[in-house]
Length: 487
Image (cartoon, rainbow, N blue to C red):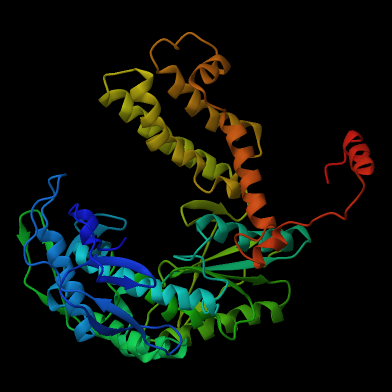
């Protein structure tokens, strides 16, 4: 339940309980009042909202009821006035270092630390908006960020499945890696409101979102010092619940009118196409010009220092492209959503980087943790080390024996650190710990990913990554399997 005051305070819910989409969100003996709530298809839903209790004793778990009373009052004000309370529109920003040195202010990003009641109110609106977006298929298939059943892994597999198929047939392929400059902080509120209306959201929901974005204030809090409060004139708050969904709506029309293949993860954008002839390369340049015009129209700006071109294929002419009046630099290797991709499509560099990172964390555990018991070491390895070896590994899985052994050596070292297993062979250590080798875990992950693609869990477009063979009798399939047919 959301805001279920009766359950949280160990009291029986009264008969006059508030409901949202059929869910009870509170109870109060005071008579209810009806308030209009946001709908998804132009129809305002109705929700009964109770008054929060004026006094609630501490619950049996020791949680004070004043917090839930405050949240209930905020919810009441939110639904009655059509906007969130001004107190919930204040955010303290923690400076988050994106990359580089923290002494440079440009490298820091303001991550808004909003209150829990504010996040609850955002979640209510988010459920309404997401339901409308999914029902009407508003968000384009090329968007994989903050989207259901999609991730960094689906983004990489979907895009490079097409790139590798082009390269395998002897084509030259050019891929442009594009990055916006402070994308979340530059979203104009007036343009966002127009796009919210255009995607079919009703006026009540749009009005509430606009009120939530307007008159926001924030300050930077670091150590024991804080800045003065400043009004936020643009952007969607980073660190909020509703912000990523609004940004997806804002950038949804980025790929309209493009001839090449474009794919997005929030604001990280890749544009690719065949570059065999001057006409092919001209089409890629025209797409870049269209993206530049979109950025100017929507008051956004590309970070041209981070925009790079990767050239794939043996017969690639390494054509230069420009973004606006600036020429984009070519690169031989780029970090794509945390995975190193080079112009030879060789994943050895990614294997080296993953093994180096995992070994570094394992060394910190070795130096900082005195205990060597399996109860301590196994959780630390599973939580801190192994994720670096398996992040998006279904995309960059190693094929060379040297790369496979390099990754496996990290787990060999980790299991050897456990007390009592130092002198046992690797296979016996795995058996005693109830673990599998990384190679077997990758095989299991491949089968799970393939099942999701084939069954359409991820998306119809991604089903093309696999070609299903014609149905054959069991005898024919068995005979082909015995003959070594891998189809």
